[in-house]
Image (cartoon, rainbow, N blue to C red; front, top):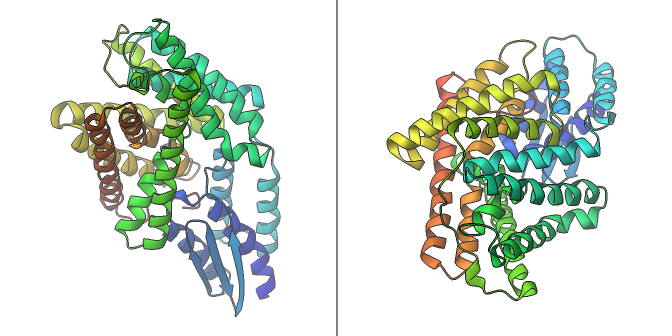
Length: 405
């Protein structure tokens, strides 16, 4: 088989893996090398957070792309393609044609459905933050605003870059106005975080810790800097909202409010959250039951662990069970890849919301509470990383999760 024919397949695949590399550069490299081996060639692949080098037979290609979350139905299809390549069922040209067809497919869910998904995503997570009817109402309204900004801003590159900041200003302004008018109980921070949860880089934060723990220093450091920058941008949006509205920064405070929703509503919230994940991240309906099951399992295990041993240990146990379960499910033919079913469950554990709440408390003149929030984020980040490594070790594989394995 000619080298150029293999490069025509590996080039676009490398580019796609780079754009969806939040789950680890080592898995991306292993996937490229394994496919080259299947076709009788030796390939060298080096992935960083936003760049990759591919070398086959002395010819080198370089790529630079922004990492992100790919459409989950696309992940499932690429996973199936790689499985067929592993079984020797496709020539490189056939695999290339199939990959092109997968990447050319339109987004599964239309714009209105994705806006509904962001509302569902915000409300579902909001119930876990504050189990009150005011949380449901505020999260639904602010989630709608964020959904409109995200979906209609995405096609415009310049607007997409500033969407997190704009969303933070708008959401913070809405919640602060409600607070100033005496229409909400407690502090604004718990009410504004759910709608901004979509932007919080919990996956990048934990991926950074995972990369650093496996000596992928450049990729890990880059992701960590990116994650902190996003949190600071979101926090600055809240600060600007106080300036625009001419309200004191001390209005940004975080305080627990007694819930007036029963336990059943909290679990229904996670179901609603799972629906949001399916619509926002373009998951195929056939994969939804697996993703929902893992979200509920992770939430239950984490809740039990937190009640018994505290946040860090509970999060560690949740991450361990999540990773092991996702890998075991994905081993069976016809099942969705681990990344697809664990992405939603990962959000259940994400430490980024603690960091944002901490930074906004700091801005509001509550430095002790702010430092505590940031420290909680660091502790949970480590707990998730170690839990993921433990979960992978328990099922007998050194590979965590990526779209192609």
